[in-house]
Amino acid sequence: MSEAQLRYQSQAVAMPYFIAAIGLFVGQVLFGLIMGLQYVWGDFLFPEIPFNVARMVHTNLLIVWLLFGFMGAAYYLVPEESERELHSTKLALALFWIFLIAGVLTIVGYLAVPYATLAKITGNDILPTMGREFLEQPTITKIGIVIVALGFLYNIGMTVLSGRKTVISVVLLTGLVGLAVMFLFSFYNPENLILDKYFWWWVVHLWVEGVWELILGAILAFVLIKTTGVDREVIDKWLYVIIAAALITGILGTGHHYYWIGAPAYWQWLGSIFSAFEPIPFFMMTIFAFNMVFKRRKQHPNKATVLWAMGTGVMAFLGAGVWGFMHTLAPVNYYTHGTQITAAHGHMAFYGAYAMIVLTIISYAMPKLRGIGTAMSNRAQVVEMWSFWLMTVAMVFITLFLTAAGVLQVWLQRYQPNPMPFMATQDQVAIFYWCRELSGIVFTIGLILYIVSFFIKGEQPQAEPAKA
Image (cartoon, rainbow, N blue to C red; front, side):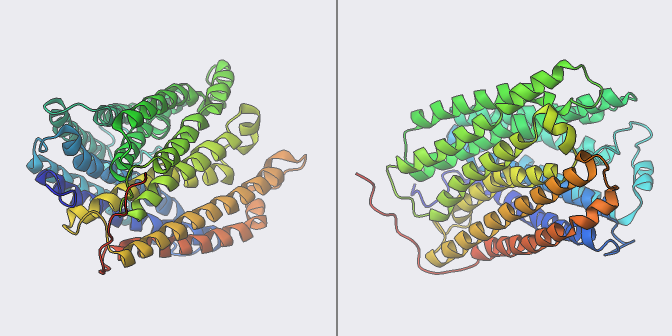
């Protein structure tokens, strides 16, 4: 079968997941723009969409669209890695609609009724799980997520176990299992606030700084194998080292969230030391991506995908690594915790590490899923690469403006002998919020171009001769 075609027909089930991911990504960005305006124009869309609701929708859409992207990526790459059809396409499609409907209804619930009312009508009094940051989903939604995750893992697991086992598929499956297991701690809601925060981080931190990194590494390795032609054994060795570093630093690095919540004092040392090492796997990932591209044995016609793959390593290292390290040490975190410096780190880290890898696999897979070939037309790729630069540069500026706001916030509100009140401080940093909003508009234009690029027709690119 030609490289321009799907090797296995069941890979086509990835397409609705990718489409849903991009649609929800658009929603997340729009609510980000709404929040950005509310920072400087407090009455914007009030009382229809209060700031707390906009923030809840913004962060929940982020989680949901990335999960759709991860699931679509798994459904696309696991059949190729396992050299067999997906265990059940019907199950995959059924879970897609369950997850999508549950997600949309949850967002509508956030927007349509007060949160306390939503908790009452969804059975939170029977099994209290709501009201915690990033885990605001109603209990019934959380149960639905668990059902979807179990069905998904069964489908992927049976495919992997009955087919060829590769490092990529095993690492991906390990990350997906970890994702599902750690989410179970969202149901544990102890009355003791210290215990609550302690185990809350087992979901939030061990997702984004633990098992999600395995998913990121597996997807990136798959794309690099397909676009560079570098020997699988070479990429496998890199992947082993990267995930080992990610797990060691990520698991013990959880301690940098325990500084000021009443946990034992030894977490200040453990958290500071091991979280200081957390940039290492991301730096290795950057070297990995560039090294594989420079050693490539073939010039893949999908240059946009290669650009996204290289950008993922760089931006993940900057956002999750450099900006994470900037305020991870306990003496620094004492002043910066919960400021706009945290927001700066979060924006670039999520975009660089996870949003970009989902956009990478969509860029690679979508031409084949649509029956076009190995790549979009030359004109379409030019537009897509413009979208890459607009979104990436805009995110860099969003991060820089939030960092500047955070540094000034720390100085005015927390460090000086006579600190200013919170709202007075916000007035002083408003210029950075306006600049952040303008950067967000540029980011939105880039996202629109990414979507538009899939509808641009033109001459199909030809593969260039392989390097000597």
